[in-house]
Image (tube, rainbow, N blue to C red; front, side, top):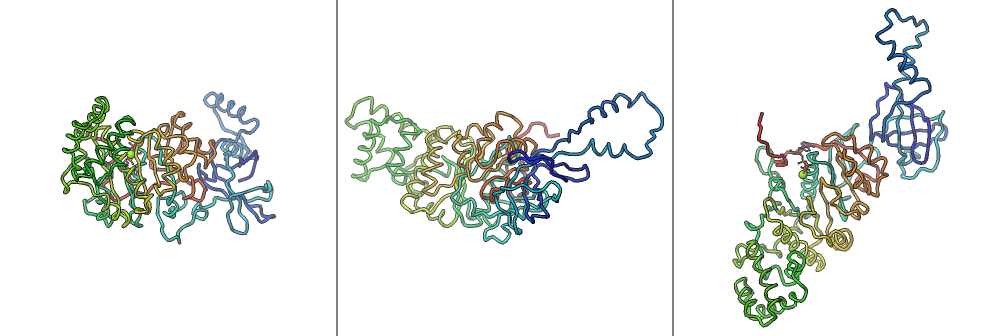
Length: 479
Ligand SMILES: Nc1ncnc2c1ncn2[C@@H]1O[C@H](COP(=O)(O)OP(=O)(O)OP(=O)(O)O)[C@@H](O)[C@H]1O
Ligand SMILES: [Mg+2]
């Protein structure tokens, strides 16, 4: 391999057909005189367009069938020309430099064209965390297995994206299981009910993490009580999820306080209190209709044995447990209510320092997350201790600020230009590299960018999991 050209942070390298390099590979350009090196990543592989090649190939095409006979080539030139025709041009991006055996992220010099030796550089040497305290093996790169430090997800905002069926939920399950194993509290908003069995292996045996996983289905084993939810959280939910007008919310608080004073804070009492409370008829109607929606969705109960205990759940989470909220087949309003209740309660518990932190996994969040939460999650809630991972196959439903602020991005294949445009807002990698690599990623392979790979973009083939992943789409034809 030889350096051909450098323009900005792009280096073009000529590479013979025998030398193998793939998109995403790292190369070490070692200047043997200076004893320094550049670390570059291959982002595209093209044919080298040499002068005269087109003419030669056209001649080949024209004479292929028409001229019969024996090729006389005493100096064996044709094999060289064949090789030249197949010579590759590797388009690479500079990712860092190498001095005294240490990789650095900055590179401000240019290696020699003549004295440089170019070799494939194993990624694990750049992203080595094998001796880290909390390793997470994500899968294999071209050269070896990739183990990262799970602490690099702590305090971070992450995005897993890619087109349908490429393995996003699979990767997120792998991350969740590793977090649980390391005693980190997790909360999963599961829209398709595909995380409900992550505590079970393929042959239906419980795995070591099983006793730390609770699956909650709203309306079935997840119901809320007025008292345990509290006025602040319920009011927020009524305002944001059910659009209760502000004026009515004041009356709602007064009714609540009155019932609380007399110790009658139950659904039935609340219902009749709304009806007899002295207020304007339109206000009463506003509260009454919302309260009845709550009752109809069967998310609330007066029976203490059914009620979700937030106090207890905090203790469980601090112990490193995961809650999977199974929202499959739920009414969209019910999803929004449950999410609103949880997020509001979590922020309350976090700001009161009852809960240390929580890793939140949100699949297709645009179905249930209200507009104003996006900004909040990126800024305020993150400082409080909500570390979110968004998982989506519709990248334009995730707000741009999330891509710009994301610390780790796991990107699977996208072929559609519109989708690629949406994800190219990611700040941690240049648009050209991202689009070029992501377009050609096979299924189950993802490009990882960010803190977890020490800002060296890495392509990894995600490892299989021995859990009931349940991600499959149901089919009619079985043959
Ligand atoms: N690395 C992997 N090893 C083995 N099986 C995998 C891997 N990745 C994904 N799968 C399997 O492929 C199928 C699709 O994966 P998954 O559900 O994770 O895709 P997805 O990207 O989340 O799709 P969707 O966009 O529809 O949610 C699942 O059955 C899953 O178990
Ligand atoms: Mg999925």
